[in-house]
Amino acid sequence: SQKIEQNSEALNIQEGKTATLTCNYTNYSPAYLQWYRQDPGRGPVFLLLIRENEKEKRKERLKVTFDTTLKQSLFHITASQPADSATYLCALNALSGGSYIPTFGRGTSLIVHP
Amino acid sequence: DAGVTQSPTHLIKTRGQQVTLRCSPKSGHDTVSWYQQALGQGPQFIFQYYEEEERQRGNFPDRFSGHQFPNYSSELNVNALLLGDSALYLCASSLAGGGSNQPQHFGDGTRLSIL
Image (cartoon, rainbow over all chains, first blue to last red):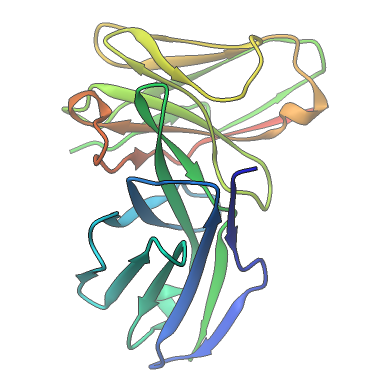
C-alpha cells in the first residue's frame, strides 16, 4: 500500500543550528513534492515545491532535496530561529485518474530552543 | 489581497445532523479543494472543484458532497454526521485549474466537533 512517513517524534534543536526533516514514501511515483508549514490552529502554508527531475531547491534559509531512487525528500532549515517552530508537512502529488491528487504526511513538529 | 476565508471557524453538531461549511478562495483563484485533518494527522483530500464541477475525489463516502458557485466560492456538505467526522476541515484554493504544479493556499479551517 502507499505510505508517506514523516518522523512522528518532535525534533528539538538549538537556535542557529540546521534542522533536517525527513519524508519517506513507498509505492508512489510522485511527479512532484511539496513542503508546507502549519502552526497550531492555522491552515498549512506553502513553502517549496520540487519536481521529480530536480535534485535540490532553495529559498532563503530553506533547502529541499528529492531522491526518487531512495524515495526520500529532506527539508533543511539553516540558521534556525525560535520562530521556525511549527509542524512541517510534506505532500506528494501523484497522477490518479488523470489528475494530480496531493497526499500529505502526518507532519513533523520542529521546536527551536533559544 | 484577501486570502482563503472559511466560515464558521468552529461548529458543534450532534450525530445524525447535517452541516454546511463555506469557503471563499483567494482572489484570482478558480479551483477549490477540501481536506479533512484529524488531530495529529496530515490533511486528507476530500475532493476538488473546478468550473463548478467535482473534478477529483478522495476516499470519502457519499455523505460528503460539495458545490462550487460561479464566483468560485465553495461549500462542503456532510450528512448523517458520525463521531469520526470530528476534525478540522480545510479549504485550499489554487490557480488556473489547479494544474499539477500549482501550490495551494489554505484557509485556517473550520473546527467541527460531533457530540
